[in-house]
Image 1 (cartoon, one colour):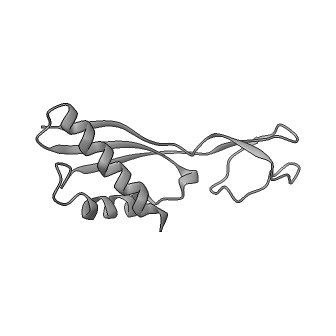
Image 2 (image 1 turned 45 degrees about the horizontal axis):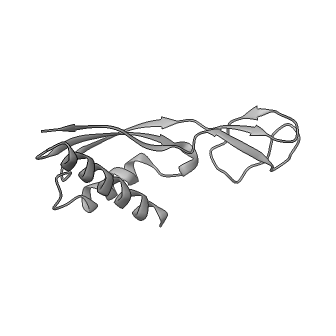
Length: 113
């Protein structure tokens, strides 16, 4: 499950950022999550709750802003959306495309005490 590594990274980064700014506790984490990451927000929240135990982020609320995908076909230039990286251009069938957005995983901000 690739989610474990991703969530552990979120916990580590949030805790480090909180410590850098003297936070005693992190109460909320705001994320931008691209749909191409194929991580369900509920799974991310569940794993975060367990992996943040014993840290300043324990009990923090996780707010996720889901970013839809936007892909551009390198063959025909068509821009399209897809829920997965395993896809083909709906216009020409090419699998050679570039991701314009939808693969983000960004900690936008933290609420701290």
